[in-house]
Length: 68
Image (tube, rainbow, N blue to C red; front, side):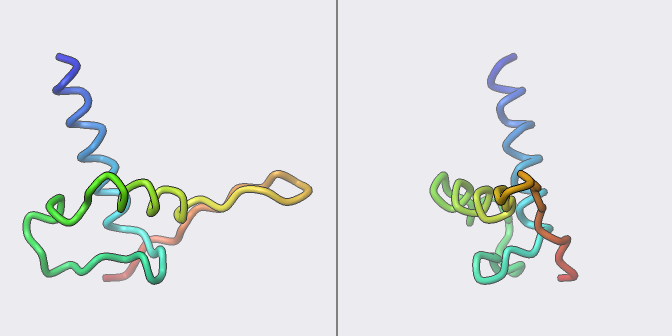
């Protein structure tokens, strides 16, 4: 059951990361299945780049949805 839950979480992460605009870290949309271009390092970097936190007010901003 744990493996099934982990797979669902990973699929939602890939769906989220594939549909946001993280500038130069965006991946091409011409590769199928899309999950094949997401390795652990790529996912880590994209997650870090998708959220910008900090500053004196501790405000967090999330990446915009891409239009691709």
